[in-house]
Image 1 (spheres, rainbow over the protein chains, first blue to last red):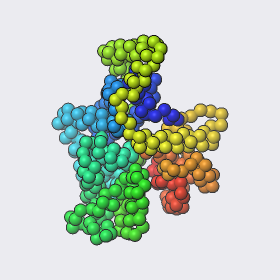
Image 2: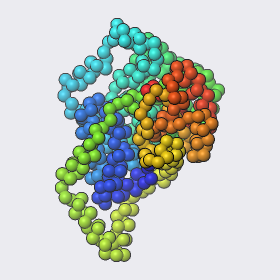
Image 3: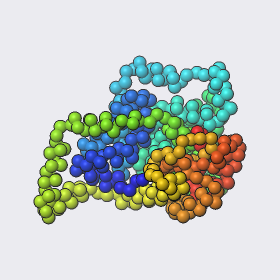
Image 4: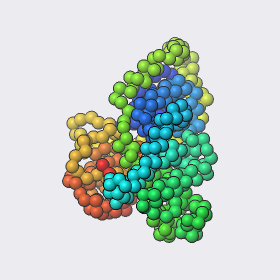
Length: 186
Length: 237
């Protein structure tokens, strides 16, 4: 049960309190891990990034000023680390990933079956979104971040947050259409 | 202006209300924005149709994440190994604070200032977070009473293995009290089996047997009108 606020834990971590660090880590480790995993699509890298994120939290807790929620701050760190990791990945790995993402499965019987299930196709399309679109979809739907919080995490204006989410959904519509499901605009 | 007039496939921009639909589905709009979206959905059937797609996306993104890998159990050890490998700068600073704290009034003042400076607290965010934390605590109490009369469990950990029952995902309205939620669960013969996961979602068992999707859909439709429900969807697991 969560009884200590994130802000109180950060204050304790700033003083070197390891129990507070463990409590905050326990609270966010799965969410942060899955956020970076959705971006980098590699469990080993996501594991490494997850601990790096909280290592930064440990080191920088004393500089946290509370201008945003603690979770917003943590996700900002996670995002930066995931993007850096993506930039470092060998081009060959990214090519493999792209190939997976755009795999043409038009004649695959499993996909033909999946077409009958809107949910399964939608899920397939969500996975195929670009890193930028996966990021915002994850922040809005899974991490439950407000427009303001996404703006702070991603570092873009709130209006851009809304339009980026809209274009992510528009891309989803295009992917759905490619698999035979027309849902209109977006 | 309704959604159908505003942004058909001719390239015109979406309305502000349509842009907000994902946040409405996630329950992260403020009250006035939520009221605006609700009113628009009530008067615009095309917008309501599109919102059903938003809800479907929302449910699938949750499902993708819930089924994704989890970090390894020993990750906390890996974290502290990295922390311990850091230069002793932090430990030295800690020692100074401890020494000051043990020196009486001056120490207490020093510790107090160390905690507060130069913090600018976002009070509204804290209040909202506190409300969610309190609700999670209250719901954990309900789960505790229902399922573990003699044991201990946490609010964020699945409390039962997924068996042959039928589950839905529910996010309760932030303003719903423990009594409201408890009465809702009792009246509908429901039990919370896990949660909260990302976004304060609880897995709630609606039947002890596997129901067909149409039956589950009917149950979801019946329950979603209740005042305590913020979001409800069939669990894909």
